[in-house]
Length: 336
Image 1: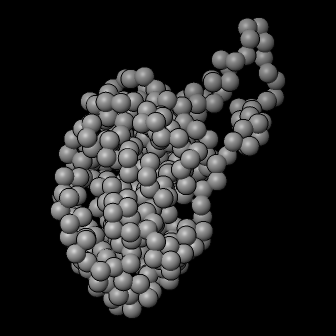
Image 2: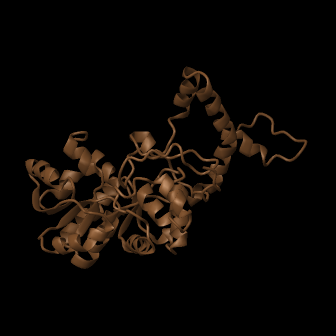
């Protein structure tokens, strides 16, 4: 597939955390012209990031033939070839590498860096809301949410289908104007929005064009990382947040997660099982209203963004988009 490149992303910092959203999605065969595909697998690949440069060099030398040649061509095309476009005819720029120019340019744009709320800061905000019994919603935007919003808006719908065959599994069988409007409204109204740190094409490469299309001023949003769920866990903050609270669990792993939390002394007052996509949100909200709880952990793919915002806005509770952290805790891949 050869299409026009995605709009240029904004500045941010690199990350190597699992992606939010749902489902494995092999996208290596379909990506916009001139950019590499973003992965969804393990650590670095989950955010579409390459390994560190030194590791790249080892890979290029260790694997013979086409891989090494393709790697060198890609590095050149993404660096020195871009620099060459700015050098006037009959001139050279001696002894200045593309990396040096990037570093110099970055210093110019450093004042434009936007700081994201850290795990300990987010834990403080959540705890304060719980103590004050006031609503708070924490939603997260991964490639699933962004591609849903991008369909037929900033990207052709067919291209989104090719890039994101996992969307039905993530709760969006087909991105429609109504679904996009609900999702955009939830993002606009959420108390905290987790955004991807990765600059890969289907992460930050879509984030800012999508927000602009829907008239959402990113500078007015309270931002944290889209992997804040994992960061809270890695910082040892999940159990302290839940201790002494009434917890509602929503998602396909809710029964197993409830047993795990109970074994750690957490009071789970309600379980709502699988969410059958965005069209199931009214039923889930009706059942949610029947439970007594202080905080809801929602692991329901893309519908979690809408659910968290509605739980906070309509029921006055704290709601956290818990994502695939639920799966990893239940399987034992991660330990509480």
